[in-house]
Length: 292
Ligand SMILES: C[S@@+](CC[C@H](N)C(=O)[O-])C[C@H]1O[C@@H](n2cnc3c(N)ncnc32)[C@H](O)[C@@H]1O
Image (cartoon, rainbow, N blue to C red; front, side):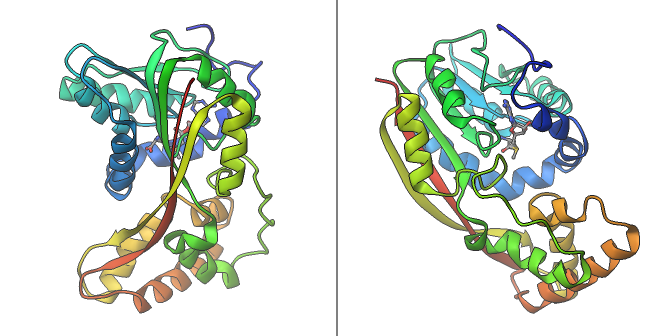
């Protein structure tokens, strides 16, 4: 370990956010978010093709779900290390590893400027943890240095918001009750920073990666299981405020606006409930590349 997130990090705002309300929300809802996002951990791990004995670094590991799964794939003899800037999320990850007897390890550091102890790695993986760097090209150039020659990169990231109906349906329903939202800044650090395929390709190419492949993965996200439309919608409302743009839009709002917005979201989600629950389209990229 050469450093921890410190004042010199280029990602100060992210460090603040992920150690504040956003990190707390992810930690409080870790169980439910992990169920929601399980498909994407599976997809990133399948793309990484981990082998027993390998060393793998999980970038932006959060509460550790993907690191814990990776640890079983590299056993025996391997190393699964999760790196993150969020102390609260890492606490949860360490508790989970201890509770399950996992050999996964976790380190608090800014992955964009740090080469964690345990390098060089055979593989770098991430489930939605690489889109928050202030300077993504410099970050991936640093991450390349953490890989062995021939080492693999495999991560999953969101495609544009407009293709992720599971996030936008709720936000669009809430809009009439909310003050006008600031327009999103294209490519800014955040969930949709890697939405454009050509941007990902250019960043990885400039950072020195080779064999870059970017494949779409279209799935459905289950926001609620079976129930009456009202019951399913109530569950889906709860999940919609756990992550994504609705959660961000509601963060600073007074209670009466939140209430009005959530009533609109509930009504909208009831219209898409089926006897099997509420499942809406999710669009991601599965990205793989190598170090020469
Ligand atoms: C959307 S969450 C995903 C967490 C986890 N991978 C999962 O799928 O549950 C993004 C994660 O990236 C982490 N992160 C953001 N910027 C980072 C950085 N520069 N270095 C390390 N982790 C970072 C955040 O703290 C957060 O845990």
